[in-house]
Amino acid sequence: MAVQIEEYWKEALQGEFEKEYMKNLRTFLMKEKEEGKIVFPPGSLIFNAFNHTPFDKVKVVILGQDPYHGQGQAHGLSFSVQKGVTPPPSLKNIYKELKDDIEDFTIPSHGDLTKWADEGVLLLNATLTVRKGEPGSHHNKGWELFTDQAIRELSEKKKGIVFLLWGKNAQAKIPLIDTDKHFILKAAHPSPYSANSGFFGCRHFSKANKLLKEQGIEPIDWHL
Image 1 (cartoon, rainbow, N blue to C red):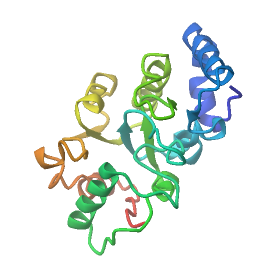
Image 2: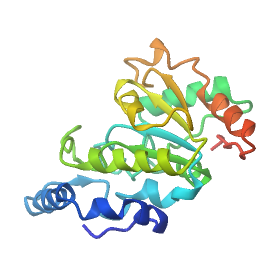
Image 3: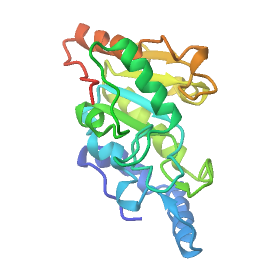
Image 4: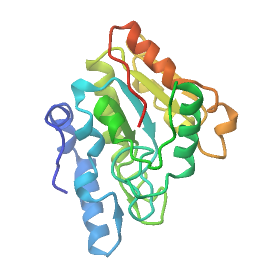
């Protein structure tokens, strides 16, 4: 598992790559490959969220759980799928909320959120890999320790980040965040099972921009 990760992130997380859990994770991923298991996303895209949103550019964090497990979907950004792939139900619900929340937002035909990542939205999954067709298959293999540390680093070394935490799994990360320095917006998960329980109507996108502008930070252009 050759590490291809943005320079400032690599510096911030350097210690993690030397820890025992990361060595075990590397061994696990190599074994998956040796056994012929298909793992998503491809190796070059595992750290895509970090590479598109450098440490010093992070304004907003959207936390997901693990990558999509269908062919061609995952490309290392939470909730995002590659162009040419039908947007999954949760992303379709995100688009519905955006249409209600952001003026002139037009629901796109694709599900690629790279533009957000390039603007400073860290689209971070708690687990960075998954076995094809098996959601949750790489949980508790070490990735959560790594991504938790990424959240801690942001919390400690930056200020004024807006964390959009959708659902219980994302909200379980609150203890990692210094709420005296950062902003937390909570809502239900955009999944079809829970979107009607508080995701629709949350207005997180306009609220995040309001919080950024109040700090003199350029807001996110949510249009895709």
